[in-house]
Length: 228
Image (cartoon, rainbow, N blue to C red; front, side, top):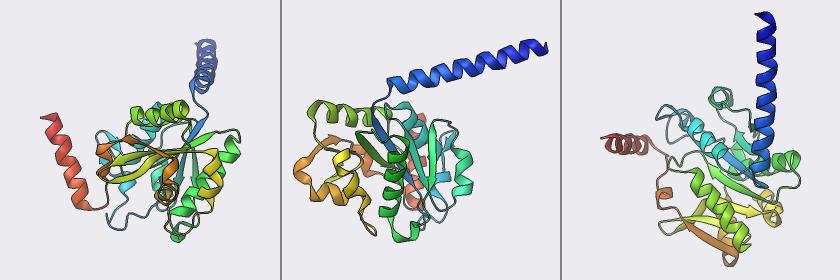
């Protein structure tokens, strides 16, 4: 029985290693950064930990990212990091913390890009996304990558309402510009500045994000209507 268990553990480890290797070979050379360091001041509680379906919001977003073609997946945490980490149940995800969170979202982008450069210095592009857009999907992320690869546009952004924003893909030529953002300037600042180099992908559901308790109540109501 003990020998069988050892063989089983060895076999499982070998299969896991093979599957991970196969998965990486199927991945694009586009990294993905989830910006999830915010303090959720308006929500009054960590939005990353809000329940969405059978998991937390951060768990849902990480699952979406993991199902996409992007690799590696990096999650930038800050506020409530120790409470959020247990919700990220994936060995495929790299977690980094932003010690300069109080200086604005630009610092989280910088920390994420620096981590990506360390993990894969050959990454040709990155998708930036946030954790409070519940209707994000792997299909949308993959579409951003596909549009970039087929058109060679250096920026591919999501379009909702009259806005171009995240999730958005930036090729490597914009990495340095992303790391030199300051204060509360985020991805949208780069998108607006280089609008002629941007291609839009429709994401009408992106207009809905979670900032306040009312937003969360609306999300729960939408989910209940879908189930009905």
